[in-house]
Amino acid sequence: MLDVGSTVMLKAVPGASQRTRNRIRERGEHGFTVEKAPQPIAAPDNRGVNWVLLMSLDGKWSGWLPVNEIEVVNESR
Image (cartoon, rainbow, N blue to C red; front, side, top):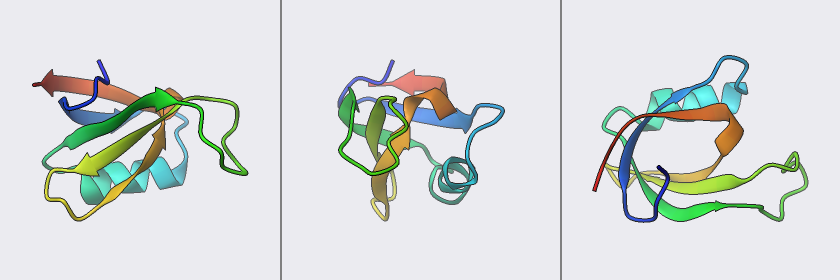
């Protein structure tokens, strides 16, 4: 589902943080490429969940999103 190199369209799940909703809305119009598989990250507010590193398809944004706040709508390779 969130395999490195795959292209995904995402949506925020109900209850997702404002940050996650904003990133998907602002940067995910054309989808994302998975850069790193879901994994724990060393961040002060990692909330004990796995995060996935994504790159917007336009190449203008790269960042981590928590996997418990996103849902893959479709996927291609």
